Image (cartoon, rainbow, N blue to C red):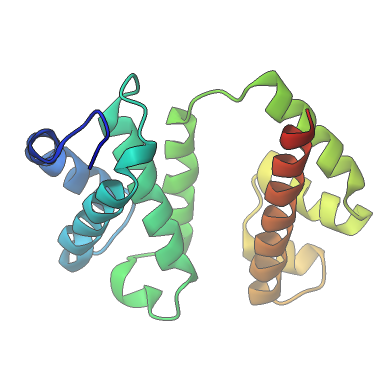
Length: 173
């Protein structure tokens, strides 16, 4: 590891953040039996991505972001009922913790606006209902006359499409 954080420093950071990361993972609604596994997974992922870590950033915040993403992935898995206590609660808690995320750059916001404008009306309405109005997948399924699983799948596809569009837009800028 050639980065600014060496193996020994990473060990120190693991010791420093282990307890607080476990508390954070549990606060996201993860079943107690799985907290250690997900915390461990977060540290493993952090180690793998250590060369991308900006040493001027808060390591704990970066680590919590990784853990948040792992919990999101658990929500998508078939066996999520074993690790996640309550899907709706966990999604709400994840949304609350998103408020800790750093603000976006103006170029990112503009790219998002342009990419949203390119979406078909129905996709744009679905995104607005979910993220601006805070409606859950069950309610969206009723409103859009879709199955709940279909709503989740559509939102996943739209998020991927937006992510790709934003990346392309920012590369062009």
